[in-house]
Length: 409
Image (cartoon, rainbow, N blue to C red; front, top):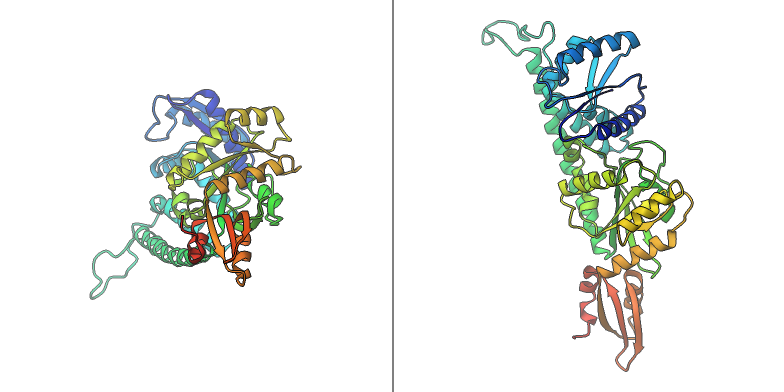
């Protein structure tokens, strides 16, 4: 593992980032054998690290029989090519490792297409000229004299065509998802999206609240595909609770672009449950990284409830985070500690987003009374000559459908 400490970064931050990179390569299926760091005012244009440090890295690779070198910093295609030529082995950057993990964990049709699209966009500028790539791919002849396409050009054209095809496929899948979302909006149910750093316990939280049965593993990016389940809040009103892909520091921009249709679950939600790992070495850094990605997808202004998870692993840090973030809730998805407080907090936040309206419902319209109970929270009821007067908290969509029974204020 190789990292360069630039002026805007401390040695401690570099080591924390390398620790996370070690977790990433472990998830990808590789083993760390050594680390090298270097402090520089700016990256070297040829090798990212200095020429002398690159030679030192080569000697270390030979001594340890390491077959891969992974940089914590993002390498340009030229730097990657120069390093592989000098070292005689594979040179990768953090982005390539994250893409590899996503490729392993994508299971749905949309997830696979999103990962392939991000991989192809990453690889396109890195397609290299082979030993015979300068030779023409077309034979000479009438109408074809002169040089034809080189293998390099053919490879790039094929990747470009595949990217265009994947873009069209994802557009179609996005339209389907949009229709599904419109159906959920017509149901009048509020939506809550679980977001957070990878391995913070988002899927565990979804399972604890809804018994969703989503895969839970103590590794990074175990869940990529969104899952939505119905959750009944303490007041009786139901909401839709969705799990989303985890975030990480310096999440590749290509992945954010490719997964935008999946991340729309968060963008179009009424409330974000931001899950934080209380046992993490730098939970505040993880909170900042998640909010940075939320800003990139346009979800930075949505109401947010901070959920400090894994309080059973580090109760002191969990209490500190709850104290430093007023309105947050301490919780353990493993033990269920704090579950009632969390449900009450979600209910309070969702009720704050609804409007209390007054309805006069005829006695022969029991179906409307049932709808109000199902889609909202009944505050009070009173029997009158014309029917039942009901005060209830309802989302705008539900209130709009019941407008004929609305009492004019």
